[in-house]
Image 1 (cartoon, rainbow, N blue to C red):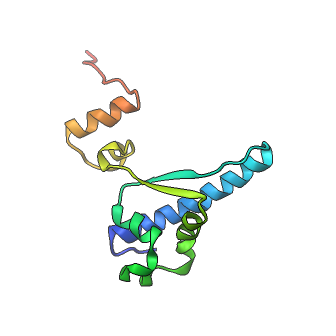
Image 2: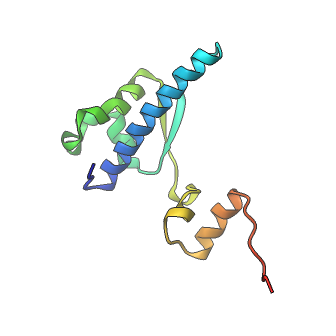
Length: 120
């Protein structure tokens, strides 16, 4: 799938995540007799969150395949809640992006990875 905007890319990724999330909710409900009310998905793109909450109001949603609107359906049903997550709180960014040392140290500390000292 080729996305021409970061909004579209985040929306598609969140939709695929929604599929896996709903599958896991159903699996947990079968294994243990405990109902999961709502799961929160954290997304770092506000436009993608707005698109998921109201796809009709956005002209960019007409280019997204229907299968990816599963996210919007689950948000409307109340099974998923979308929450904005700032990019600087994305722990995986240190593994996928070139970042400054200041940006690198915070997620490294969140993952509880210790800095290597001189190995002489």
